[in-house]
Length: 324
Image (cartoon, rainbow, N blue to C red):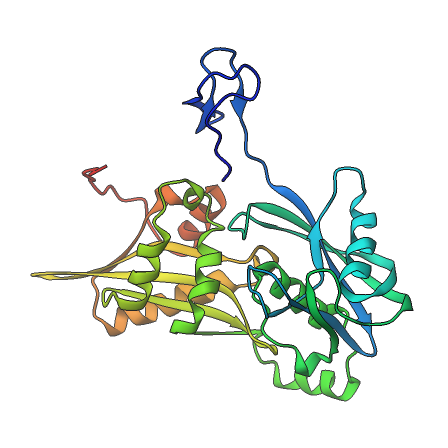
C-alpha cells in the first residue's frame, strides 16, 4: 500500500482518520483523503499451435519463472489496446482479440493490489520470441504446462483447460463414466504455502496493515496445533482452489476445534469446494475425539455465515475477552 508523508494538495503533514469504514491517511488542514485503489492490468492468453504462449520473466517478482504475458494498462489506452501492445512487446507477436476470457483481482499483489482483465487472442503476424522484460517466449501444450507463480494466472489457465482447450471425445466420454470429482482434499504440504497465503489475502479482514504474514508462514510450517487442508483441482499443473485451517485446543477435560480461516477461489465458489473442506475438518475432529467445532463468525461475511449455518453450526453464545 502506497503511503504519503505530506498532503499532495496543501503540503500539510498527513494524519489518519476513519473514512468509509477503515483508517486512511487524511489531511486535517484541507480535508484531503488518500484513497489507495487497485491498479488495472491485462493478461493475454495467446492460443498457438494447439497450446498456450508463456513468457519467462526477466524481472522480479518471480524472475526466471514462466507466466502469461501481462502488464499494466497505460492511462491513455483501452484494456484491449493494452493487451495487444503487451502481447507484441513480450512475445513478438501481433495478435487480434477473440474475446474477454475473465476478470480477476489480486489484493495480495505483487507488487500492488490490482484488477486484471484476461483476453483470449490469436496471432496474426510476427515471430515468437522473448522481448521487453521477457527472457524467452514459447508455446506450451496443455500437458506440458508449468506451475505458474501468479494466482490469477493459475486460475485463468484452469478455466482455459476446462472450457477452451480442444478435447478428445473418447477421453471426455471416459471421464463421464468415471465421474471423478474435479478436486481432491488433502493435508497441506510445505510447497502449498504461497498458494495458501494468496488465498488468505482474499479474506477481507486480512487486508489491513496489521497482518503479520511472516508469523502466519511460521505457524503454517511449525505449529502442531494448526492443521491445514487444501482443495486441489485435478489438472496439470495442479492448482490449490481452497483451504481451511483447523486449530486444536486441548483442555484438561477434553478438546475443541476452532476454524478461523477458510477461503475458496472466486472462480471455484458454489461448486461444493467449501462443503468438502468442512467435511474433511469434521472427519479429522472426529478422529481426534474433539467435543465440538467452533467458527469465528466475526471474520465471515453474510454469505459465509449462511454457509456455516446451513452446515450445522449453531449461534450459541461464547464469551470473549478481547486482548487487543
